[in-house]
Image 1 (cartoon, helix red, strand yellow):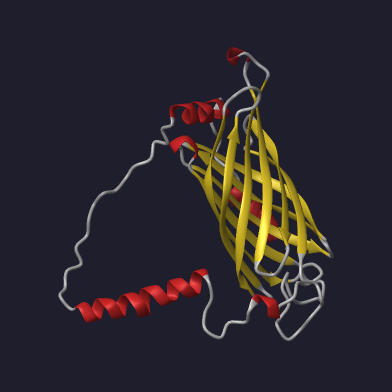
Image 2: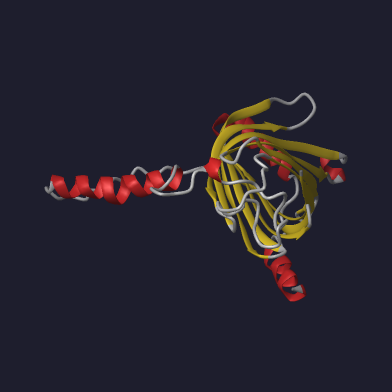
Length: 272
């Protein structure tokens, strides 16, 4: 176990980054230029067999897409599943119980927070409150607060930048060992002080894999496009569950425009 944790931390160590990253992020937002590229290349698949393409669309494209985003035939419905009191509370299953078991718990609240650093001058913290009023949906608010120590040549002091997300998610996969969600929301970026607040609709998605007690693997992403600038937040973390509490270590990646902020994160969480 100790060797696995050491290898994970070494694999996730970020590259040394340049200074003034938060200032570059703010400049990108003000200019409204994400530096992205568009691909307008068209593709011609050809063919004159309309029946073949209709069958391809409905059986090989439409149905799997519908199953992925909503549900497959015969899949257990959300109202037939209950929440575990907390992951591994029964000694075996994750946040959801198998449909033949019941705990009577139909909602869940999770609080999570961590500290992070890119091993240069940028550091900060993340906080998340995630409430599932029922087994099918979740409401989530989270905030990433970044700080950067400026050199004397840049005037010294501390620069500030934050990203706040308000998310609505559909808990698509509700398995006792694996859960997956996707949804949308609002992303807000703020440089602090009297600087302009930038916002846009956003997309979020992620999964948790409870592969072996007391461990789980968590990953998520949040994507936005404030002021025509692409913004992304990613997390990948290995979690250790200690009854209703957990501790974790992993990677927090932030990208706004062309500026990347890869960071190592260490934090904890609790379920209610």
